[in-house]
Image (tube, rainbow, N blue to C red; front, side, top):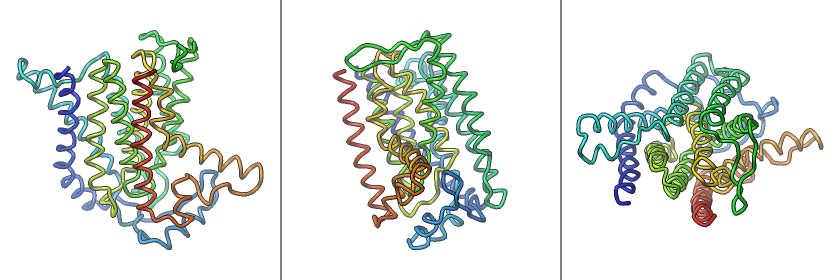
Length: 358
C-alpha cells in the first residue's frame, strides 16, 4: 500500500514543481506576444448584449484587465501533466529497478484514454484561444464547431467504453446498476457536453483553479479506493499541475486559463468520472453531483436563466452563471472565489465519504 500511496503523491508534487518552474517561460512568451484580446465584446448565453456584465466590470478593480491579462494560462496545467508523464516514463525505461519505475502510471488500461482526451481538449482549446486573440477580439472556433468536435471525440470514447470495455450501465449507490446498453454512448456524449459547459466557471481570478483542484483531488481518492492506482495518479497529477496554475492565478491573475485549459480539464474529467463508475466498480457518475457541485450549479444557473427569461420575459439571476450573480449583488470577487473554494473542499470530502461507504 505504501508504494501505491507514493505513486499518487510523488507525481502530484512533481507536477506542481514542474508547473512552478515552467510558468516564467510561459508567462514571458504570453506577454511578449501579447496573448490577450485587443477588443472585448460580451454577449449573454442567449445572444443578447451583456449589459450587466459590462456594468459589473466597469465598477470593479479589474476594469480593463480583459485587454491586459494574457490568455492560454491552461498551457501550464496540461504542459506540467505531460512533462510529468514523460519524465516518469523515461525514468522507468532508463532506471527499471528503481522508484522511478514504480511511479510510472502511463498504462493502456487506465490512463491512455484520459491522456488522449487531455491532449485533444488542449489542442482544440489552444486553437480556439489563438483565433480568439488574433481576430481583434472576435470569437475563435465557433461554438457549433466546438460542439461538433466534442461530439465526435465523445462518441468515439463512448463507443470504446461500450464495444471494447463492455460498459453498458451506470452505477446507482446502494442499489446496483442501471442498464443502458448501447445508449451508454449517447449518455457519455451528453455527460461530456454538460461537464464541458461548466468550463464557464473560469470567470473570476482563482475560481476555476481552486474548484478543479478539489474535484481532481477527490477523484484521485475515489480511484484509489477502487484500486485504480494509475488513474488515481493521473488525477493527482492534474490536481498538482492545476495547483501550480492557481499559484499564479490568485488575484491579481498573471494569466487566465481560458479554453485551452478548461476544455482539456472538463473533457478529461468526463472520462475519469466514467472510468470510476461501473468500470471501477464504483459510483463515479453519481459522485459528480456531490464532488462537482460547483460545476453542476454553474451549468444549471445558465440553463435556468435562459428558460426563465423565455417563460417569464425576465431574468432569474442578475447575471449568469451564478458566481457572477454573487458579484452583481455586491460580493467582492475574492469573497466569491474563496467561498467557492470552501464549498468545493466540503463537496470533495463528502463525495469521498460516500465513495467509501456506498
